Length: 532
Image 1 (cartoon, rainbow, N blue to C red):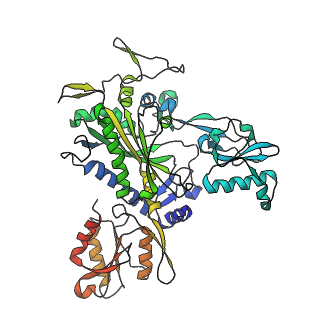
Image 2 (cartoon, rainbow, N blue to C red; image 1 turned 90 degrees about the vertical axis):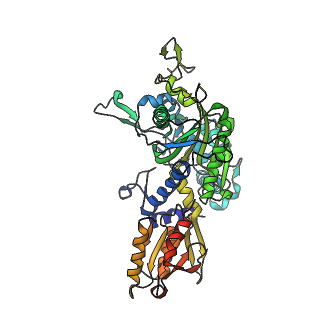
């Protein structure tokens, strides 16, 4: 599977375009085209239906500690700045960056890799932004150029290690930066806060400063009491949200995998502390199964528990669902979704701001680093269970999925090339019918003998309930190929036999099988295809 071919198809068929392309684009931002917007919308709608609107709150699902409710929210992108101080984002939401004094380029410290080379009577670290075979080839090419050697002398290179992270390097004076010609041009790592800063109202000073949200979760936490009071939900219950988030990534890359504007599909699931571990395991397994149900191969999908050293400051357990994206080195996986056991960190933080009480007054303390801790809302965000007369801080399980990363994974998984009759190669996108941008294509075989009128009649009868397309341009084989590249599961052709017995040619995208189907069965067959 070639990532270059997938990217080319996305541009050619209208799945994804570089943002502001006519002005040269803007790194880290992408626009979804006519097919892409339908694909991503279908992914989000499948998630919302399976997690929220289609959830049966009256029946306990097998394997769960109890029956549960699910509700939704849509919170604002800009919130009170104190939200981000109490959540920890203001102080802790950063990456470490290094700058190259020669090339003037900036890199994430943890994303640079390289290998050690014996050169000029010292060990030199030849760095690269990629890993795997591609990284080995790049470092080899750069080592030859750095030493003034020819390609035929590649066997004379004295490598002292395989590919390792720049994080393991202590002395930057012996590092050759990715775009540099001299050693020692990288600066020491320094913090870079990932939040986008903006200003609210007419005041442009710090008094009007605010931030674009870096995640959708905090909007759920600050509305916890509003949801409980207005809906009368009882624990355990979940609050779901789909929305845009923004992170000022140092080095956005790998198509839409790491971008500065992206969309999240998040759930904050509130439960009794005694049941939180059981719920964590259940949500972890359920979210993994959701991806396989929609077509991701278990061979390219893993569920990985975080090591203790990887856990965030709020987490007492996290698992990542990861996918083997084709832009990653062989054997490596990229995160699709994280399922975190956040305990009671968030509600406590927004109530107390990590503060202590002096009688009835909230006072700010200095932390171990000397920085002031942040004042919370002071509102009582505990949950009172009137069924058992108990007040407690609910524990939170957070399945947090990237809508863009999920869409990218489905694009990569769907892409296939296969030989067909005549020695040609067919490019086909094998999307699950639920997320396919177009559910069926309607063709008149020829533009005469009443076939266009019959095809348009069928198109109009289906259009209101299904995403169907009408196409009468070119040879029938060419029309099939266009729909294969769009990932359309079914093509329906009105031909000469239709005009005599009211049946159509039903052509399956994956098997290429063609059968005759009566007009009256078409809608039923389509609905059957789209069932979860």
